[in-house]
Length: 447
Image 1 (cartoon, rainbow, N blue to C red):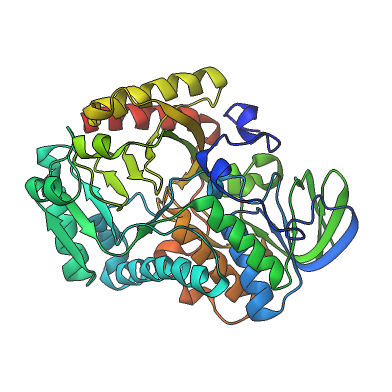
Image 2: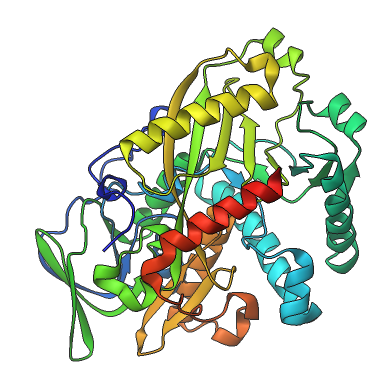
């Protein structure tokens, strides 16, 4: 049912991330453990990451809905606990020009405004619920990895500031080197002041604790093995229990599997993203590379590098890649990333990495997130496919789902770029071939 190695879906295996070593365990009573016996609720949420936890939190807090979350592994085990911690936007594979051309200025502006709101939602959740997500940086940097890509940043800056009215600043190479950092692939940058870095697993566990505090029932280690419809009720079966619900939310993102939701899974493309983290760098080592910033950075490669300095001086470096998810290809990918880190930041060539992990970014043919109801069953809702920028988009989408279920919003309130089920991928069994061809093409473009 999947075309990645089964080990990528083994919910009993730790991710191996630095975040797991840096995050306190959940308080007692938050994760109720595996669902046991027969239970019922109004809304069942399948997936215990940012989307599902936010949906449960807002349903319980704002709408007093009886909601339960079923998660295959520990809460936050998937992409929500594995990402690089970039709280930024936009969650799309489209350029701003493509976004404007496809949806028109009005809807494009609604889309961007919603995602600025999404970034602020993460900040407000942290403050309102006392979530220690370790915020870093007053904005994010989009860095030209070659001289000709700076022209792309000039166009991006003009659109963000002019069409969308956002606070951005274009920085020449010399200015970036003087105030932020320098490297072999730094030729200027665009500073977007909307965004910051977080510790993502602390955010996920904090959101889970907040949801439980407001009355949501959360069940980790509760993989849904069967899903049946009995009259107007859904019956979700796990290894040790069953849950009946009037409505269901699918919040599984890149871990969506075809054995339960094939009509939805066939519209999604999970893409592996990989991260290495170094040991803490000394002050002299950081100074050698001119590193002065806490802002998260991503470059202009289509197969981007994304990187940031963590609070304890460790350096996080991430990239897309690997088509199998096998252990051997993971070891190969780690070696490639360590080599590339040393090429981009030559003063850190010999700094060892202490952690390597990977997880799924979820994409679709529309290249924008998808929020909606299943066409053949309006009692099944979904929110997923954040295209690598789900730290803010996913909690926002979870809140939207809660508003739809709670009756305080309608689908017309959702920007067109996000609304409804994405198109089916032609011959979905060929997705590995499509992805391999796309990765090869983008590598040629990036060079």
